[in-house]
Image (cartoon, rainbow, N blue to C red):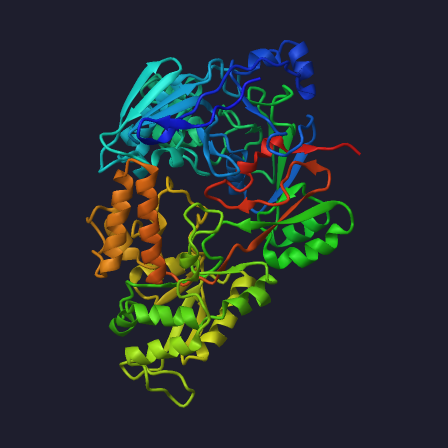
Length: 635
């Protein structure tokens, strides 16, 4: 039986060669495909699988090998939610496993030299969902005619494919092997391939060439454009090639299930991919479930429908404040409800806008003593007890204990409840005068009314803000929540109109040294704590503003050093220094992390973990736990 060989060091490189041996066991035909195999519509399983499939040994993972059959029902709120199937199915060149280690998946093996030379070997005999061979020709097409095609790419490559503004050299070594080479280290590359919304390096060339001006006869291409009511060949190709949101049922895929429903629809059926490259240790081709059915409806009704057993696997559109109801519904015997830890650095964080336009507020927000005082004034234990039933962890906005980068000092940085110290810091700043309501006066004589803008999307958020407002009032700060639509809120933050906003903290708090530290350094204009500084680095100084705080400049310099680091040891050291600066400077004010996400599933659905990390990145929510291995037990 083929097994994975653990990653081994490649000279001085942090990344590794990952190889697999051949499958030598007996294969078991999928019952729902037997009729098509018998009628000659499909080849037998041995001809559908690659010569070296990916073998998932479920017993080694502490789970049960399953059986084929059944459909997994899921509830979604809008048609674009079908992109969740790409997330949950989680077939990638390389993937994170449930320990958040990178392993080969679609590719048979990969090796990395000096963090800049990446060589991928495909699985011989691997096929697209329509049975057409998947080879390096599909990667060549994606690279040369889509990713670097000016009309399709908009003239620029994804940032993760550029090092100091330069793209890699791409080579096809043979029918199964490709190589990407940068002039300097690119540690972002593999994580970008394993992301929940990945860079797609392969596209089914045999299908898509008909929509490409380089391959199709101009007259025929014009006819296809007219038939699809597209504006031009670019719009046609983009629509027909969309992989993340799989709206085109004719587009071949490498995912475990393929969409069979053309939008618009209120019910999307994803059928099993008969050529999927994974098998279990008993020789059963994955996925176990024959199909996934996604039904669209009102998001407000999804918790009630989940409690009534109208879904087989549900976490989307379910919040922690639905937990009590769902646990009561569990007693009816149709569902199970588990609480997974969320993967955010803080479930909700106050984001001081260091780029606020008002000069008085700007001076205050940029004074680290003010940010520290606000953080110390928050009673996180009360928030945990009242809002999260004591199940969360009071913490600064930082990595979780599951991360190898975790240090207790980061978690506790200015996150202890100490109103006396908070008052001392506010007095030290000079905010000693108060009005008749005991609210401190700002240097311009106005009361310290701190308006915190939020998207107003949950009672959880409003409950948390109400508690924080009470805490801050005790140190002479009046906090006033203001709700608006999230797009409006973000525009106001970027324009400098907003003093402070509320959002979740670090989106990925189970980071490893080999994952980018972009979240805690100025890197993008959508960062709520320094949007203009983020834009400055996002555009290489062409737009935005250069930081005026030394510690922020230091974070940006360290992030650049991380990209050039050649070893995991170097990247770990850089990460720790960045986390130390970020938490000590309180660039975001965390509350609690390790909060719980209710996961509801049928009591007949097996292999859904009782405990897990519910995180978009890394992990792709259910993806790292391999939804293709979930199966139904009989009555």
